[in-house]
Image (cartoon, rainbow, N blue to C red; front, side):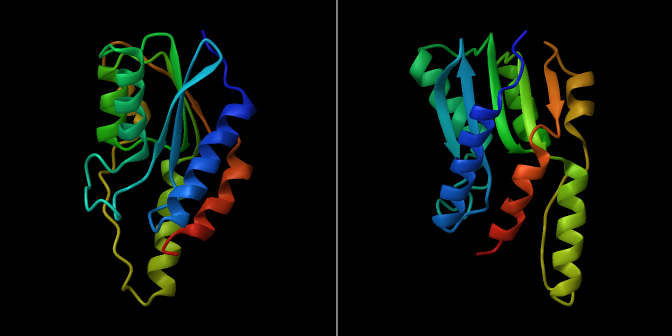
Amino acid sequence: MNQPEEKFMKLAIQAAEESAANGDYGHGAVIIKDGEVIATGYETLKSANDPVNGHAEIDAIRKACQELGQPYLQDCIMYCTAEPCPMCMSAIIWAKMESVAYAITRDDMIAEMERLKKESGGNFSWRQIAIPAEYIVKHGEPKVTLFPGFMHEESQKLFDLTGK
Protein backbone atom coordinates (compact mmCIF):
# COMPACT_ATOMS: atom_id res chain seq x y z
CA MET A 1 0.00 0.00 0.00
CA ASN A 2 1.16 3.50 -0.82
CA GLN A 3 2.01 5.63 2.21
CA PRO A 4 1.57 9.39 1.83
CA GLU A 5 4.62 11.57 1.26
CA GLU A 6 4.89 15.26 2.13
CA LYS A 7 6.41 16.25 -1.22
CA PHE A 8 3.23 15.24 -3.03
CA MET A 9 0.87 17.01 -0.63
CA LYS A 10 2.99 20.12 -1.16
CA LEU A 11 2.16 19.83 -4.88
CA ALA A 12 -1.56 19.63 -4.06
CA ILE A 13 -1.21 22.73 -1.85
CA GLN A 14 0.55 24.51 -4.72
CA ALA A 15 -2.32 23.56 -7.06
CA ALA A 16 -4.78 24.96 -4.49
CA GLU A 17 -2.87 28.22 -4.35
CA GLU A 18 -2.92 28.43 -8.16
CA SER A 19 -6.66 27.72 -8.19
CA ALA A 20 -7.26 30.55 -5.71
CA ALA A 21 -5.00 32.90 -7.69
CA ASN A 22 -7.27 32.24 -10.70
CA GLY A 23 -10.36 33.28 -8.71
CA ASP A 24 -11.51 29.85 -7.64
CA TYR A 25 -11.59 28.18 -4.24
CA GLY A 26 -8.26 27.11 -2.78
CA HIS A 27 -8.50 23.38 -3.48
CA GLY A 28 -5.99 21.22 -5.32
CA ALA A 29 -5.37 17.53 -6.01
CA VAL A 30 -2.51 15.40 -7.30
CA ILE A 31 -2.56 11.75 -8.38
CA ILE A 32 0.59 9.67 -7.94
CA LYS A 33 1.46 6.23 -9.30
CA ASP A 34 4.73 4.46 -8.59
CA GLY A 35 6.19 7.64 -7.11
CA GLU A 36 5.43 9.71 -10.22
CA VAL A 37 2.95 12.54 -10.69
CA ILE A 38 0.30 11.37 -13.14
CA ALA A 39 -2.04 14.38 -12.95
CA THR A 40 -2.67 17.63 -11.11
CA GLY A 41 -6.21 18.84 -10.55
CA TYR A 42 -7.29 22.43 -10.10
CA GLU A 43 -10.50 23.88 -8.72
CA THR A 44 -12.36 25.61 -11.57
CA LEU A 45 -15.87 25.68 -10.15
CA LYS A 46 -16.27 29.46 -10.38
CA SER A 47 -14.10 30.24 -13.41
CA ALA A 48 -15.68 27.50 -15.54
CA ASN A 49 -19.18 27.91 -14.07
CA ASP A 50 -19.18 24.14 -13.56
CA PRO A 51 -20.18 22.80 -10.14
CA VAL A 52 -19.51 19.20 -11.21
CA ASN A 53 -16.33 19.03 -13.26
CA GLY A 54 -14.93 22.08 -11.46
CA HIS A 55 -13.80 20.08 -8.42
CA ALA A 56 -10.03 19.57 -8.21
CA GLU A 57 -10.43 15.84 -7.53
CA ILE A 58 -12.61 15.32 -10.61
CA ASP A 59 -10.16 17.33 -12.73
CA ALA A 60 -7.26 15.17 -11.51
CA ILE A 61 -9.13 11.89 -12.09
CA ARG A 62 -10.07 12.86 -15.65
CA LYS A 63 -6.52 13.92 -16.48
CA ALA A 64 -4.98 10.79 -14.90
CA CYS A 65 -7.30 8.46 -16.82
CA GLN A 66 -6.43 10.26 -20.05
CA GLU A 67 -2.71 10.13 -19.24
CA LEU A 68 -2.82 6.40 -18.50
CA GLY A 69 -5.28 5.65 -21.33
CA GLN A 70 -7.64 3.72 -19.07
CA PRO A 71 -10.71 4.33 -16.90
CA TYR A 72 -9.19 2.92 -13.70
CA LEU A 73 -6.47 4.19 -11.41
CA GLN A 74 -5.44 1.12 -9.44
CA ASP A 75 -2.26 1.50 -7.39
CA CYS A 76 -2.69 5.29 -7.35
CA ILE A 77 -2.86 7.62 -4.39
CA MET A 78 -4.62 10.97 -4.52
CA TYR A 79 -3.46 13.90 -2.45
CA CYS A 80 -6.09 16.57 -1.97
CA THR A 81 -6.08 19.63 0.18
CA ALA A 82 -9.57 19.02 1.55
CA GLU A 83 -11.66 15.98 2.38
CA PRO A 84 -13.40 14.87 -0.82
CA CYS A 85 -17.11 15.66 -1.04
CA PRO A 86 -19.51 12.72 -1.59
CA MET A 87 -19.39 13.20 -5.38
CA CYS A 88 -15.59 13.23 -5.50
CA MET A 89 -15.21 10.35 -3.04
CA SER A 90 -17.60 8.29 -5.17
CA ALA A 91 -15.57 9.10 -8.29
CA ILE A 92 -12.39 8.03 -6.47
CA ILE A 93 -14.00 4.68 -5.65
CA TRP A 94 -15.32 4.23 -9.21
CA ALA A 95 -11.82 4.95 -10.52
CA LYS A 96 -10.59 2.14 -8.24
CA MET A 97 -7.95 4.28 -6.55
CA GLU A 98 -5.97 2.71 -3.73
CA SER A 99 -5.87 5.58 -1.26
CA VAL A 100 -6.49 9.25 -0.57
CA ALA A 101 -4.49 11.57 1.68
CA TYR A 102 -6.26 14.81 2.55
CA ALA A 103 -5.29 17.67 4.80
CA ILE A 104 -8.34 19.70 5.77
CA THR A 105 -11.20 17.63 7.16
CA ARG A 106 -14.90 18.12 6.62
CA ASP A 107 -15.20 19.29 10.24
CA ASP A 108 -12.48 21.90 9.60
CA MET A 109 -14.41 23.14 6.57
CA ILE A 110 -17.71 23.32 8.46
CA ALA A 111 -16.09 25.33 11.26
CA GLU A 112 -14.50 27.73 8.76
CA MET A 113 -17.72 28.22 6.82
CA GLU A 114 -19.62 28.92 10.04
CA ARG A 115 -16.99 31.50 10.98
CA LEU A 116 -17.29 33.19 7.57
CA LYS A 117 -21.07 33.14 7.79
CA LYS A 118 -20.96 34.78 11.21
CA GLU A 119 -18.43 37.41 10.09
CA SER A 120 -20.56 38.28 7.07
CA GLY A 121 -23.71 38.72 9.15
CA GLY A 122 -25.23 35.60 7.60
CA ASN A 123 -24.56 36.62 4.00
CA PHE A 124 -22.04 33.85 3.27
CA SER A 125 -23.58 30.98 1.34
CA TRP A 126 -22.16 27.47 1.38
CA ARG A 127 -23.50 24.23 -0.02
CA GLN A 128 -22.71 20.85 1.39
CA ILE A 129 -23.94 17.31 1.64
CA ALA A 130 -23.18 16.21 5.18
CA ILE A 131 -21.78 12.78 4.36
CA PRO A 132 -18.15 12.21 5.38
CA ALA A 133 -15.67 10.47 3.08
CA GLU A 134 -15.38 7.62 5.61
CA TYR A 135 -19.09 6.87 5.21
CA ILE A 136 -18.82 6.71 1.41
CA VAL A 137 -15.77 4.40 1.67
CA LYS A 138 -17.55 2.16 4.20
CA HIS A 139 -20.47 1.71 1.80
CA GLY A 140 -18.45 1.58 -1.43
CA GLU A 141 -16.44 -1.04 -3.24
CA PRO A 142 -13.52 -1.38 -3.78
CA LYS A 143 -12.29 -0.09 -0.46
CA VAL A 144 -10.09 3.00 -0.45
CA THR A 145 -7.64 3.72 2.34
CA LEU A 146 -7.99 7.22 3.78
CA PHE A 147 -5.25 9.29 5.38
CA PRO A 148 -7.22 12.18 6.95
CA GLY A 149 -5.47 15.22 8.32
CA PHE A 150 -2.23 14.56 6.42
CA MET A 151 -0.19 17.79 6.62
CA HIS A 152 -3.16 19.45 8.28
CA GLU A 153 -1.26 22.40 9.73
CA GLU A 154 0.44 23.28 6.46
CA SER A 155 -2.92 23.39 4.70
CA GLN A 156 -4.71 25.67 7.15
CA LYS A 157 -3.39 28.70 5.26
CA LEU A 158 -5.65 27.76 2.35
CA PHE A 159 -8.64 29.03 4.32
CA ASP A 160 -7.17 32.52 3.96
CA LEU A 161 -7.61 32.19 0.18
CA THR A 162 -11.38 31.57 0.34
CA GLY A 163 -13.34 34.28 -1.40
CA LYS A 164 -10.28 36.12 -2.68
